[in-house]
Length: 546
Image 1 (tube, rainbow, N blue to C red):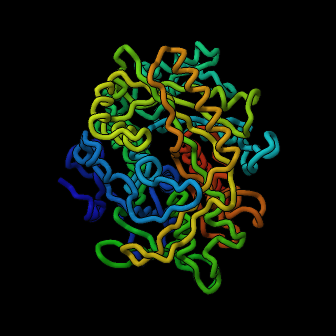
Image 2 (tube, helix red, strand yellow):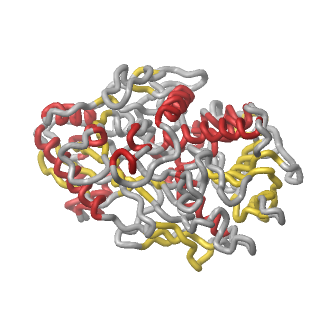
Image 3 (cartoon, rainbow, N blue to C red):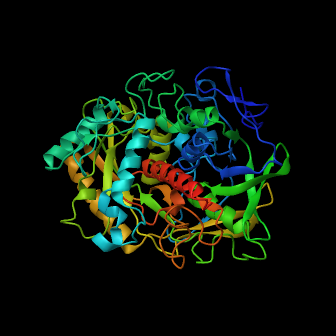
């Protein structure tokens, strides 16, 4: 079995995700050749951008610190084994509410965190793009929701999102490309509770196939979605953007840890230093795009400090690493008399966005959605031990209820605050690079949102007759902010196109550019922004402004 410690994308070929042991031809660029774009990271930001730029005729090299997995042969139905998908390198966390990093927010693989994401694919509420102007909190995005709506539709089609015919929240939209999945038993518990409380619910739009697509089969409802899909039903970059990008001429380099971006004498970046095959190498590039997500992106920029930019690249505003945001991810759990078997199917097949689109009756800014849950046995037992304090015989007895358990979990907006941030620690990693120090503390608004959600979800489970109801009060998911986009170089890191205000051929394309977090999973918005950035780059190139 492949151990993930030697590069696979070499010798003019890359793994073919759709067949065991198969390969697809891949163009390789000499390191001495100045490629148009070197992209750091291949997740929700880097892989769509690499795809769209390669299809537009640009020469592209995309580098990722993680392995290039073959889902059909490398992914096991084993929770412990699949921890290999997470970014588990050393990081330091502090603040009043230190973040737990790893399985729920950090991936280390070609395809990024989307290789183990829960596939929930939701659009932002239009007003969130002007949160400061329209809703009185956070910051405005420098993009218009109508423009984003077009890119959302493009991404939904690229991933063949399976969703309901009529989605009950937000402006009118076209139909989802694939039909919604049948709602499983835990989803129906959410539905019954929502109806009892007089609010709307819907089948969750998710990026896993409800019908065949090319060489990919529809979902077989194994329930192992968040530890790597072994059937290719999940539409992660491994089976969508990356094969397209390679066919269009992009090169992907796996197990390539980028350590520093090089700045030339004229104030433009000239390429990047990366570690692969046991040594440091250098790739020349006309443009560098950082797409390492909200911790590794600022870490790389700060580690690239030089005489001209002693505080790190793209950091004249002093905001690189600041305004880190997460999603509140608290839950309410209970036990039903009837069997639920919540492990059958994707973990979140039903949801409500009621508190994203309703502003009345709130004592907090922002919003939250909540979804049905289906944790696997090891994850559930850890949760019972850590969050409820059950050990030994008490834990064993509670695990006998596993097939009767239900849960509701929020994706709740946190407000940006400059003291929530990513800095460099003095400690170094195996490459000699300073590791990230991640500081996070909940604000009063965050705490009020959580309290509201826990009360409401408890009422929902009470309404359907659940017993032994309890709240998990400390959990987070996703990572956003740290390199926000804006219209003023004094209070943002990149412009509306994702271009550094300080260095014209340095770009950022990932969730770190989010000015606010919204109350939905971020992957669809990151991919939509990546497609938009690709179009902006094409337009700038056509005008000779790259």
